[in-house]
Amino acid sequence: MLNLEHERIMEIAVGMGELAVAESPHTLMASGLGSCVAVILYDEYSKIGGAAHIMLPYIEEALDQSNPAKFADVAICMLVDEMEKKGARIDCLTAKIFGGANMFPQTIYPDSAMDVGCRNIAAVKEELEWFGIEIVAEDTSHHVSRTVQLDTNDGSVLVRTAYTTGEYLTDKYSSEEFYC
Image (cartoon, rainbow, N blue to C red; front, side, top):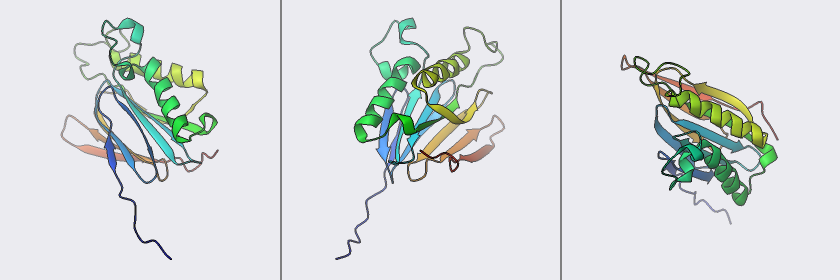
C-alpha cells in the first residue's frame, strides 16, 4: 500500500548563541547576522545539516560563560557532536560560513581588536581547520547584515543581504560538486 502522507517541512530558527541540527527535508535559518557568524555544516550522504549562530570568538575571553554555544571555539565542537549523534559522519562534513561584518566602520577600524566580526571569522576558520572540515562557500566581512537558510535536501544555502540603501540581494550557495 502506498503511503501518501508527507512529512511536514519545518523551518527551524537558529537564534543568537544557538545551534540546531536537522535532517532532510527541514530547513535551518539564522537571521540578523551582523558581526555574528553563521556556521553551516552539511553531510550530503546522510542529508543532515547543522547551523550555529556564533556571537563571539573564544569562551576564555568572556566573563559570562553561561551559554557556550555563542562562542566559536565551543559551538563548532558542540555542533559536530550533535550532528554525529544524528548520524552524520565528520569525514563527510563540509562548511559554509556567513556574516562577520563590521557594522560600525566609522568607529571600529578593520582588523582591530574591536572588530568582533573579523575576530569571529578567524576563530571559526581556526576551529573548522582543527576538525579538518573544508569551507566550500563563504560570504563574510563587509558592512552588511545577512540572513541565511540551509536546505537540508541538497545542502544549498540561500543568503539574503540587506544593504544600507534598502536593497536586498539574494544568493544561493550550492554544493553540487562536493560529495562524500
